[in-house]
Length: 427
Image (cartoon, rainbow, N blue to C red; front, side, top):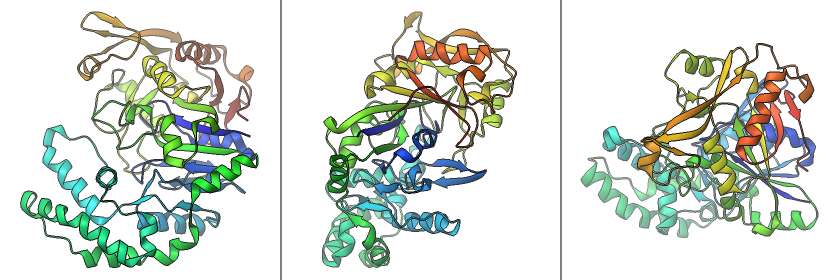
C-alpha cells in the first residue's frame, strides 16, 4: 500500500484536510513532516469546526494514527494546549506519536523572531512571530534542542547554554533586550517532559514498518509550494520544505516509498503576509472572495489577500512536486460571478511568460494575462457528483485541469467534510 504526499500548490490555506476526508478510513497514519505552529488547518465535522496548528488533520479521523515527524519544529506548550483542546471536545489524541528528533521551539526563538521582524521595518517578511525561522536556523547551525533532549537534563542544559551564549549577546547588545537565563529555559522545558514522554518514539522506524505491513501513510505538509524555502517566492517564504521532496526528509522515509503526490488548489488564490501576488484583487471582487470564502488565517486571524486562479503557479507546482493528482477546493465560493477570470500566463515588461519567471525581479513585475470563463449562479454545496454541477462549473474545472498539467481527483463544494465530489480514487 502507498505512501501519499499531500502538498498545498499555492501559498497555503488551500484546505488540505479535504483530501484527508476524501481518503476517509483508508489512512492508517497521517504525518506532519515540516513546519510548526505558524500553520493552521481547519477541519469541519458534522458542523463542528476544529482548528489545529501542530497536529496533522488526520487527528480528527477515527483509527488514524497522527504523527509529528522529525522535520517539524515543536512548541511543547502549544502542542499540549492543542491536545487538551481537542480532548475537551471529545477527540482522542491517545494515538499521537512524536519524533524524538523533532526540534523544540524555545521562548528565545519567538523573542528573536519578533525583534528581528520589527527591525526589518518596511522590508518585513510577514512572519507569524512564533519562533519557527530561528528554530530552523538553530537546527542548521547545530545548536538546536530536540525533543529527546527533554529526557536528559544534563544534555538539555548543555544545549541551551550553547544556544544562549550567542543569542544573549544579540538580544542585549543589538536589540536592547534583557538576557535570558539558562535556568528559566531548562526549567520550562523540563515541565513538559513527563507529559510528552509516552508519545515520543522513532517515528521513521514506525512508518517504514507500517509501509512494510501494507498500511496507508499520508504525509502532510504544513505550508505550501510557494512558501517553500527553496522553491517558493523567496524571501517571502517559510523556513522549511513543504514541497513533496521535503516529505522524505521530514518523515524519514525513502522516495521509493511514495506512490502518489496530491496537490491541493483553491478554485481561486490567496496568500498571507508580504510578497508578490500577480492575480491579487484590491476591489469588490477580492472582498467578496474574502467574505464568502472566510479568508482569515487560522493561526493569526489576519485577512488573507485574495485573487483569481493562477495557472502559472499551478503548473510550476506540478513540476517541482511531481503531482499525480489534484484536489480543487472552494469551488462553491465562485458561485454568483458572471465571468470568472483565470490567469494563464504573465506579461513581464512586454514579454509573455507561460512559466514562472526565473528571477524575483521579473516575478515582482509580472502582470496576469487572463482568460475569461462563464460563471454560474447556482448553489453547488449540495452537489455530490460531477454531473450535478452546473455546466459552467464543470467547464471551469475541466479547463483548470488542462492548464495545471495533472488530473483532478476531487472537488470541494463546501466547508463540511462531506461536501466533496470524488472524480477518481486516491488509494
